[in-house]
Length: 397
Image 1 (tube, rainbow, N blue to C red):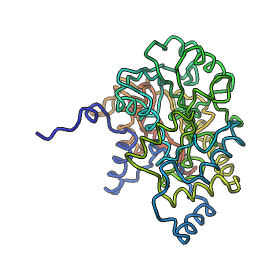
Image 2: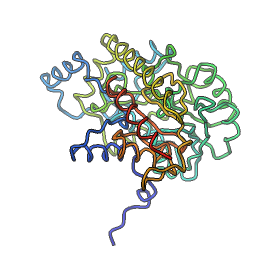
Image 3: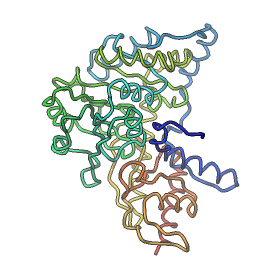
Image 4: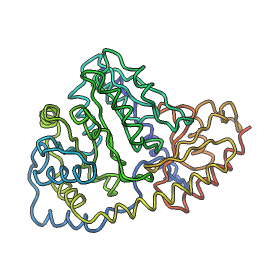
């Protein structure tokens, strides 16, 4: 019998990738589809970073790299964390991985035993629960509604903690909502965490520079949190380098040693050329980051305004990332022809098939009353997509 392992049978495929694939299939049939399902910047990698890749090739950086990444890159990450985040790390505490996604998976696999509970605020990035299940842990969800700007409170966190709780995964700015936890929010959450012995936090900060509310704040900066926090970041979002696959974890040394051991056995060090481009990204002028952030903020304002004009959709104003997460439950139970909308996934499929706009249903993010749109696309695409969405929703009765 051809049977996959139990660990794989317990996982679900990525809904974001599935919608992007369906969008590509329709495009291949000649249908004009606007893809707002994909979670990556639509900019090209800045030229000075690309030149660093060419130089690295010319300089023959073509052999295996150290498991934890090159020393100069890990030092540059420490310098970045000190300058931008007020955090003190030694290169021995840094592990460079094949994207932030691997860095998070590394951390979970290094810390979680079967039956350990991992608290995940919902809405959440689709992969968090699957990573926990891969480690045979138990995801525990805390629901944050649009009325609370999709952010959990310290009181909600306190109620969710049990003797089995090992880890909290916190993403700010957040995918899929764009919500940003303020310094006050993080201080309150940190006070709860430090009251519970052995409780750790993964702080996913990959969207930190796509932030419209001021300088980023890391939960690791609060009293007692440096020794409890694993900071995750990378170059994918801020520098439009998703395909280069460079992320990192910055953690207490005992955790970093465990991640090093794990990564050494299943991938080893990341691509040598990509590491040299990441070094250039973190060490060179940062104006490119600010230029892209300003464009995203303009697009944020545009999509919030246009979505807010569509009857039946409820929106908040996201303070970061490049996603809008409208509440769409007013359309549940409505239909158009043979298409009936019972869930946000039904709605996303309807918008793809009728409006030719690819979005992602909120079911995949733990918030079935909403759906996600990425505004990492041109102003023209945003305007046309929202026009199509409005027309498609108006047909539902």
